[in-house]
Length: 173
Image (cartoon, rainbow, N blue to C red; front, side, top):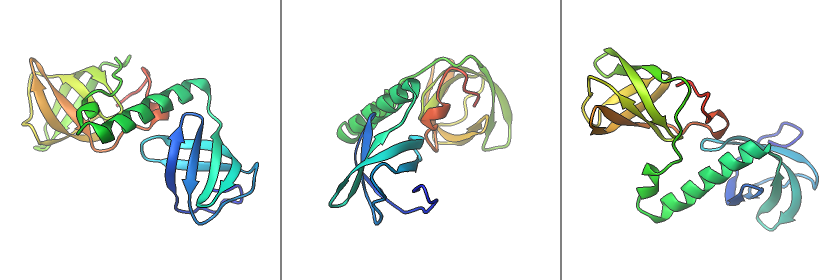
């Protein structure tokens, strides 16, 4: 979205924690502030610093904590394209402050669960009842599916990644 509130579809050609190279139908003006909405990264702001044949380059304007989270997610995204999905099991995991949650199963049953750890792509839970692998569940407000069982618990892969700006130890699923 440009400063004048016009929105255009675009494609990210290259990305780093410091900037983006964007291809799209509009180039904006040098020095113009732009806003991007990414499913994986959330809302990012930047300033157009140069034009290129296909679009423009943007210097991102991010607080240092968000820049670190963007760096972590970009690293994971780059690795997941090259390793047949192994990195998808290696997202940075954190232990949230809020450990208790409710899980709604496909059958409509609500289970009390304990959060072991959470990443942008999923959550590990302790639960006395283990819904079948592949079944759809909701943990708090996050939809997902059961991808594996482990001793005393299960792993859920979220249907959508948690936006990076929401991902910290204060997260409430």
